[in-house]
Length: 91
Image 1 (cartoon, rainbow, N blue to C red):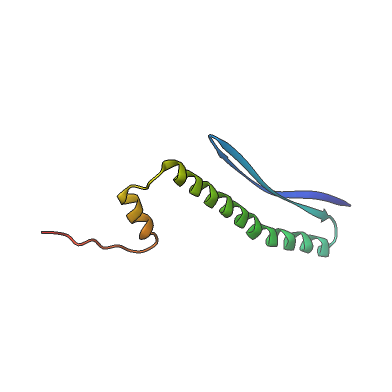
Image 2 (image 1 turned 135 degrees about the horizontal axis):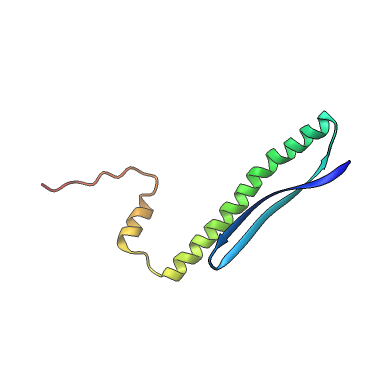
């Protein structure tokens, strides 16, 4: 017997809601069918993550445009993102 299952995620913010969804056709019963279903899930999860990352990156860029110019501190933090920064201390 065949049915459909969906893999989905929902992003909700005050001004926007976005749903990401992939439908997977499933056949119940045999071990091969279960393995195929798990394989489909395994391949779709990274695709779903990629879609969410693209969407969130676009939202961040839109937010930056709305905010205008970044403050000096924010620009410095953005430039050094992911790097350890040791600032010189003046005694």
